[in-house]
Length: 220
Length: 240
Image (cartoon, rainbow over all chains, first blue to last red; front, side, top):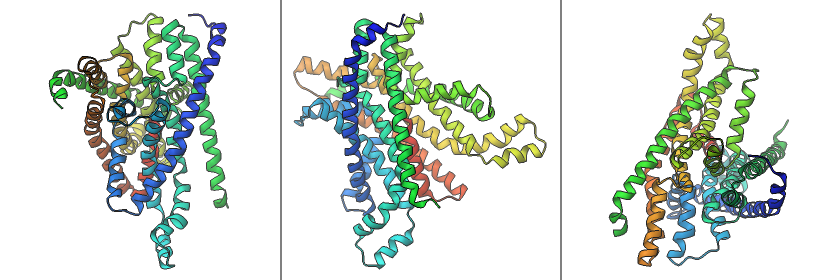
């Protein structure tokens, strides 16, 4: 196995298109997941009748089943019962629903960690329960759970590689496709390695920055 | 769900393979994790730490599926003949081992530093300090995370289907494909729904165990449980 830069350069544009798909699918899913996670956590915190236990079941179910099977279930199973989504959007949907389950738990845990006295004080001032959540509990809780939210988001980007299994032309798909065609694995695996490590490194760096910015008001 | 009943022998064989992979990789992961975690925890400032930590970070940064493909495609090139089954076991064990290493390292680090110093001051040998003082305390905080890793390993065995190991998911795929071709109906929703349900039944007791261990640990340490729940929620997705 010799490393052949020419081979690499020939397929670099295809790989970059794959990387773009990876970034697109993860970015949309990442934003959706945060919204879903926030909504789910609010439902749990306010103990909305009917919905709250449903969210609890959803969280447990997602966390205790493999993402790969979830991807198969959505991509192959949903059309069988008449729900049709494009490959890209079923990928976005699965990743977002997967990550949101972890977000709900993180946000809910952080809300439970906010001192009872504060929410009671809010209630004493005549705020509604959802106003207490929005103005008192969430601003503090979200700061506390930023590390776990970012962790889950980084996992989401890595896990977008699972979409290779249903044929979404993201980075891993492009590389594995080339490998099964030409058996030149050294080039392809080096690219995968470098890009994923770089992606995770950049995201971790961004995460550390966001954490330090959010911690600023609390620094002495 | 006649289809599932008709294929029960196949499905059970697939489930057996899944559980077999899970148990083998779990044992390998714990052996790797304890060995490397202890080496890292016990050799402060030594150069051995660097390659180990580098490998652990690398394995955790690269998606699991890339890992599996890497072992599957590259091992034969290096003259090592690996069956798909062995390729899956090796790659999942390496991945699980990297995560277990982080867990053990974290557990050892969580033991207050004065414990080691006090033990030394009392005249205990280095191995006694480690075996009698540090390890028991580290194990307590490591157990919930290891139970969590166990559910993750069961879930990640599904990745083996991508290199053609006839485990639970792969068998279900075959059943879906055969039925689609032979009978002209698409049973994906029911079959994959059933697969999800079985994984859920396998994993949720372990998750419950992990939480119970976590809560007991929190009670013993006198820390509020809610805070730990958030931390645990943070720790688990980081592993996947």
